[in-house]
Length: 376
Image (tube, rainbow, N blue to C red; front, side):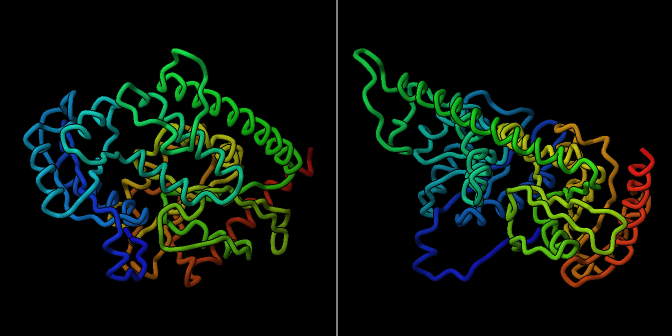
């Protein structure tokens, strides 16, 4: 997978958070599979502004209840942090609140997991008011069960909190504040959802096409090519968080609404899926999905499976789709997978290749849609 990198000065490099990655090979998961997953986790960490100074993979029959990993590895990680000047340990799998707490006490360093990191990246990338609301809601819902007696006072992260009343512990105050904020955010998002529903109703007679796929597959580049829009693109994870729509009529038998959507990823926190539901409805209510896949990535099949899993979660698994294998300019010898649905399109959105046949298919499908509308 491509990793977004910037030119970093030596001084800036010293200021980066130094992290050790940890993965567990348990059950049917092999070490090679975990190593690939850690490659992606490293890409996430780098895009969040961290420097990876080491990684550890442990094989055991199942995670431990107390630390997720064995006590021997806990001690080894603690020593490695001292050796490399690290200050954070990043786990590839979700940790329970108790496991995270126990690890921080034992290692004496910050402990994060993949869901927390993804939420942090989403918060950094969110640009519109709607995206910021959705990300904050997901963060708070993930945080709430982690408010325990060992919790660091919430004001250290979000500013001071006024006293609520005699005898009330700071933990209770923090919990109440989180619940209140969650209710407020849900109310705002409900209003936004109604606005989106009204906009969609006005577009019912238009042919709706949504671009979906794993993060960094090139959806926004293809969207820009098809719509002549200028959606921000970059070789980095989660560049697009907002569902951007454009109406196109030139060259098509009827108007087409194209929607560019947030990229999916393995182990996407369910809080994010829930909070982004109003945005992802653009996908479940589409007439056609363009499932964009980075064919230059070695994990093509895994990325397809993960995307299909999220589509199923949001009720979009029955929507007709076209499989689009993108980035053929990087991987010119790529051959579509055996059993790929229908005849997949192999393209390069960056150096336009194979786009004419895709557009011809969109013309044909939108034409059939328009014929049905006229007969009604």
